[in-house]
Image (cartoon, rainbow, N blue to C red; front, side, top):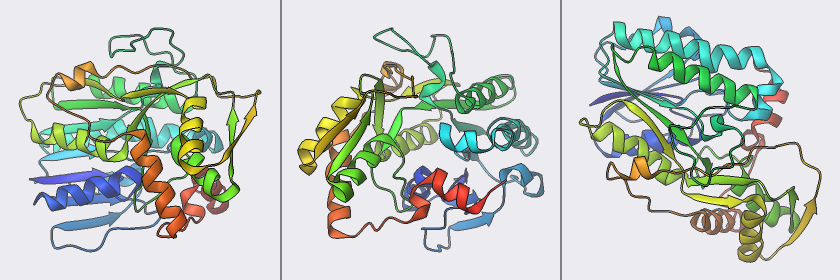
Length: 314
């Protein structure tokens, strides 16, 4: 198949693009390359450096499927420039799905966020619960979802609501919970835990990219929304796991601003035949080993907000 991956050089996109190439697909990776390019050139890979807001210049004719991962990711990054985030995360999505329809793309997959649920007390947060986003980032994702669903009669779609992603990628991020704690443990020998009771679902990056592969391969799966998160853990629980594996201390800070707390249920995803293969502990072991052995040497691109402030993207 010919598959376009928007955000194909990002944290998740880099691994997904490599998997698609390994499976023999032809890939069009579209990315701003703000955070670099960690994928070697390949005869089956075409890279286009462009902002997704300018995708009208690009043709999707001949492309079978599109995976839309491109976005301004996480709450602090969005808060740097909310207008930019609305343009990229929501308005551009409308233009992209209309372009897919006009260019006869058969299948559209969108990376939303599990945090669109906001605060939930339910033990099982399933896809049919109301969306009550707390932040601008979450709101942009909710609106993008609704835009996609409004075209349900014109294109097959799958909206994936990933949990907090963890694990190693050549285009590394060290500003997501598990990865950040491992980095602190190795660099500082202690972990700062703000609050701790907040519950977060987690998913290993290898499992998340397998989710996208699963929907790309299974043409019989009808359009719909799917949670993708498995280990519902408190922030303190995650910190304790990292502390035990990395042999470091914890520093508990009672005051915290991030109120998000919810448990994600992915039974609907599992009912399609998908099976997860990796865990939070796998991510901790792998990242700690790479940091200790210096096969992962962090730079500014690993910290989204820090890098965006430095480069002043708009």
